[in-house]
Image 1 (cartoon, rainbow, N blue to C red):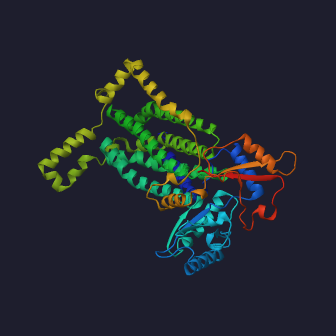
Image 2: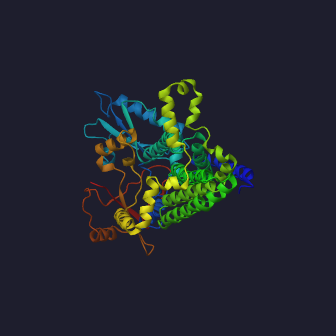
Image 3: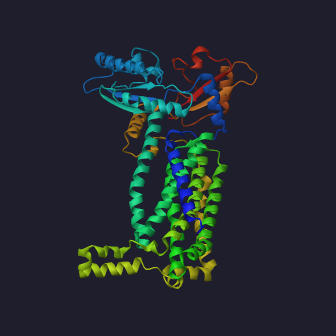
Length: 512
């Protein structure tokens, strides 16, 4: 390693940077799917129903309109304005939008379903806007393409809710939070590392390893996306774990190297001895974390598999960089690893000439920058703590194991589900729009239960068969509209419009 240190640095930096460039497009290849078990009965029923009836697109976009003060949704001028805007919007986006349905399209109808799409006081109404696409990602991308135009709808108060606005807001919130985390975390990490090592050079090394690990891991995830779906949660996981683990491993290696230098060894021997101890610890730790993370692969949900791949990629790459590029750089720096320390500030005339600042900087330098030998380390708090733990292992191990078991117990009741507006901050406009819609139109909430009944003898499903199933599976806590046949929106592309279906029917219940 020491002999080929320059080659090691060049090769590893080139590979990580190349991976980072390749991973720049990861955001365009991630998926929002993967929250459900593809082998479950509910997913199989949903796929079967979609194949025969077409996808249920009624909740893609739900636009709630509130009439201006002094008007109702039946006002002819206001109603015509909104309908004209919606028709223009549909005409301008033929590749993304299938159409729109709502009370405004037929205000004089006797159909209770359509009449219910306006409140009793006629102050509010909503419009369902189905989108084109045969998979979740295509539909979401279509929504992103039309969202700017949709937000320009005018005429009273307009609120956008539904599956796609919620999904778009959720992914956008994660991206925003990730950028905020990166902006805040990197300076804080730099300050903490400086306080730990007392020097700029030593503090920068773990941060550099973290940056390279993140870049390389993003490239690995982009490569995985070529062969299978990668969930959008994977990207922030790479960033958080890559930075955190790389900093930890960097601390192990750099601290150990400084101890070996303090013992009087030259750079080559210090690097070798560092790898025999700290390097072995880093490798063992990374393998344990990777194996532990791999246990999540037993779960059928796709997003958990993506999180597993992201965790393993970030951890293993952090470890590889910590036992390759980091010792190579330390071999080049040698004792200069402590360069640009606290005493560098003495070069500033004001700080050097003022007695108070000079005394404080000397005290701070002795506290932070002094490279300590193994004996000195063992005499400090952490060294004494380790010695006590080694002398009485059971005294410390038993309560820790008990505490960990208590933390694990709640996982037995873990129930995974899909995302909803509740994942968004309370102040998010999409969450507020969804909650407002649910309050105004509780009978049209999107969390419907759909029962798919398939004939086993290739004959038509009869009302009597449905009645028999209903009598055997009574449901409590639902509205009186339970067991209604799901209406088929008269929108081009729905199979049930062309063929009412002879062997499959849907029955929908709604939460009360």
